[in-house]
Image (cartoon, rainbow, N blue to C red):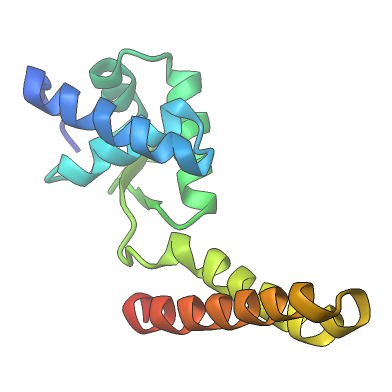
Amino acid sequence: MEMSTCQLSPEQVRFIDDLANLLSAWNMPANAARLYGYLQIMTAPVSLEEIARDLEISRSHAHTAAKVLEDHGNARGVPSRGSRRILYVCGDDPGTPLRPQVMTLGRMSELIVQRGPEVASGEAAERLARLAAFHRELQEAMERVVD
């Protein structure tokens, strides 16, 4: 596959950086967050060399960021025809990265329901019951969107 001559516009760089700043709240590493934004605006699969060039990071950092995104379902590597090189695209399902959080909400609700009565009484028990119900409702709402 031929190397793209893509050079990011100032607005694209701002978008990538602004999105990366938002993703930092989820503890996504900075290069992975920037790569996530970059892959969202790319129209074709990109190589590690293109990623490194456009995001102005080393090839090694580009590779590490791509692996982080792949591990969480935010990106996937696709083989390049006639080469051993892997190209990267954004993940197919935007809900994939959220599924672990959805499952965690359910587990939190279950834990509180099962063990809350053992550890709290009165007002604290009522607060835990509300918290469990909130987590369950949030889990169900997110499942509808993610699925």
